[in-house]
Length: 174
Image (cartoon, rainbow, N blue to C red; front, side):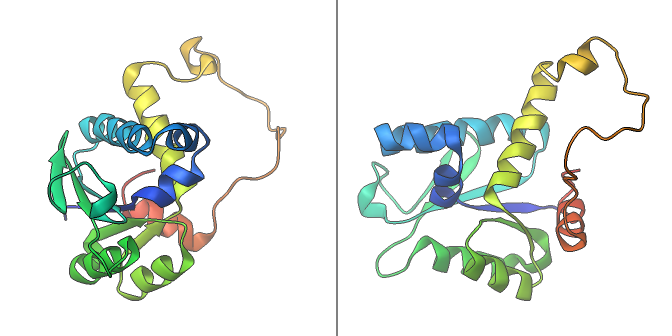
């Protein structure tokens, strides 16, 4: 089963500290940085990826659908929003889709259609972690070959809810 990752573009950009700082300087910088990050991830995991942005009139692209670095980029047309386009895609791909958004309306709709969902910050962490391991820039602890052997916890629990673990496992991201 081939996975189709459908991303709420501006939702991901504006929830990311690094991407949002670029977005505040120039909206095209934020989009370009996101596409670069996704292209690096696509080299590791060759899933089909679609990023949906609001409004073609705001873009420098000539149509509402482009392919950049192997990533499908879609812009909603008025009066539709990116959320509407994402919902249509979720309805079409159902259980073959992973919806990346922190917008609860989009998440609830996608889950009702059978699609897996993941929040924007969690997805960004996953793709950055995958890219760092692919580049060989993993954590220092792993580079030195050290392994923690004690059972003492070093911080608060970070375990996802059962529902989120199921969605992430279905997407093959763990």
